[in-house]
Image (cartoon, rainbow over all chains, first blue to last red; front, top):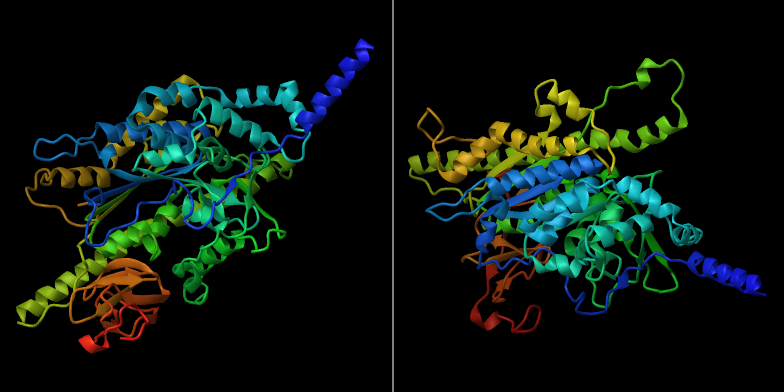
Length: 483
Length: 83
C-alpha cells in the first residue's frame, strides 16, 4: 500500500512538473502604456540635455564569455580615461549614453546597465569566471528539470534563462534597468520567423502589445544568446495591440517606398510582422534566437537610431543637441584556422550546422562596419561642402546658405583582435566561443581591450580632441573624423 | 542620407513623422523615402502638414518645403479647427 502511494505521488510530481510552462511576457495594461516604459527619454527640442552634448554609444558583439570579457575590458579602460575639463573629473565611461549588446556581449551590457561602476567589483565573479556551460548541463540533468523538459512548453533555454536570472542578474526586471537613466541598454535577439532583428525595448514590445517592465533581464540575455542547435528559442506571446497604440509614422511611411529605400521598408515590414491581429482568438507568438544571427556586432540598432526620423540619435542631431557622436564597436570576432578546405571528404552534419549558423554572420558584420564608416564620412563631407560653399558666398558678399543646426563631430572606432600584432593576433583569433574560459584567457581578454583602444589612432585622436590637446609635435589642431 | 529645409518666415520647431526634429530654415537630414512634415505650435501656418518624398538630394541641394504664415484672423484654435 505504501509503495502504491509513493508511486502515485511520484507520478503526480512528474505530471505536475511535466506541465511546466515558460514564463509568459505580460500584456500591456492599456492606454497609457507600460508602468515603467523602457525607452530612450523623449527629447525636449528647446531644452537640450547636457548629457547629449557628447553622445557615446558602445556595441558589444557576440562570442560567449570571450565577448563578455572583451567588452568588460573595454568598459574598464573607458572608466580610466578622464575627459573632464577645468578641474572636473569625468571618465569617458560616464559619458556613455547607449550600449547595444549581442549574445555574450549582452551579459556585460545588461550587467553594466543595472549596476554601473559596481560592475567592476561584481561581474568577474558573477559571470566571467564561472563555467556556465557545466552549470547548464548539470541543471539539465537534475531529475526535476528533466521532468519539466518533458513539457512542450518548457525547454533548455528556459532552464538557462532561470540560471542567468537567479545567479547573474538577481531576478532583475526591466523596471530595475529603467532606474538608471543612462546608458540605455539594447539587448538583441533574432526572430526565427523572418530573421529580423528584435530589440528588448518598449518601442519594440509595443508591436507585440506587451509590457517590458516586468520582463526579466536574464530572460532577455538568454534570448540574445540562444545559439541555434545548442539552445532552443525564447518564446514571447504577441498580444493584440494595446488600446490607443498607433503604428509610428516612420513605419507606416516606410511601407510606401520600397523601391527607393528597401532597407527602411524591410525594417518596417518586419515590425508589422510581429503584430498579432486585433482579435484575441488570432493568437501569435514570436520565437527568438541568438541576436548574432541578424547582427553579430550590435551596431545596427545604433545605426537605426541614427538613420530613422524616430531614432533617438537622429532627433538629437537635427535639433543640434549632439555636438560629438562617438560610436565604439567592441568586436570579439574570431577566425580559427580553416580546416574544411583541407579535407577531401564532404563536411559532416555538425560542420554544416555550425557553418550554416555562422557564415552569414561574418559577411553581415563586415557590411555593418562599412555602413557605419560610410555614414560617418557622409556627414563630415556634407558639413565640409556647406562650410566651403559659405566661405565662398561670404567672400563674394552674398547671403550664406543655411547650415546644419550644429557641426557634428563624429568618431567611429572598432576594436577587434585583427588589430593585434602576431603572435597575439592568432592567439586571440583562435579562442573558442563558449560560456567557459580559463582565468588566464579571461585576464588576457580584459587587458587586450585596453591595449587595442590605446593602440587605435582614431581613439587617440578622439582623446586629444576631448582634452583640447593639440596634435603632438605639429602644434596645430587636427581635422577629419574623430578630431 | 537625404537633406531637407523647411522654410517659414520665423524660427519654429519642425516635426517630421510626428516627432520634433530641429527647427525651420536649417538643413535637416533624414532617410530616403516619404516623410510627413509640419511645424510646432502656434497653428498660424498653412498647409497643416505636407507629405514629401526625399530622394537624390544633397546638403547643398536639399528638398525645400515651405509653410505660409496665416494672418491672425485665419488662425485656428487647434490644428484643423475653424478660425
